[in-house]
Image (cartoon, rainbow, N blue to C red):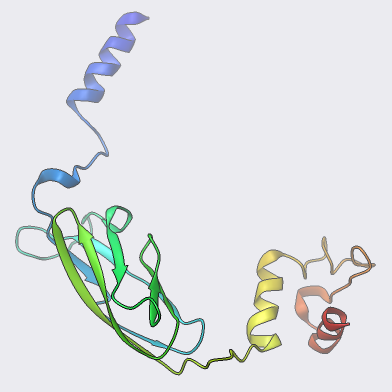
Length: 169
């Protein structure tokens, strides 16, 4: 049994399957999209950082470096960026987002427009998808025959007017 563990240990260290080393040298990478335009409140997009080969191209086996990249917005009042590279529109204007992998850094331009000071939240556009995603409008939850806790919704949000009234009363 101990020989089996020794063999497994040696094979695991000699042939590191599935492991990639980001510190192989200076990282050459591309950021997609190269430019971002966000329109409206709550607009967001995801940046993807991909290692390039020696010729500067990406292929189907290129490594995704997004998880190891550092992101920073030049103006967090215009666009916020989280540690995963997701951008969120905050106010109208333009900013740059810096993407850093190892010692290499790149900037992408971000343009934000049509952001209103007070967001116009619509029941059909914003509330119904949340209820559906959370499963609230399913037959096993608040759309059950008698609802739950005195709160009842229509199945799959099919009766928008009744659902809206149930929520706001």
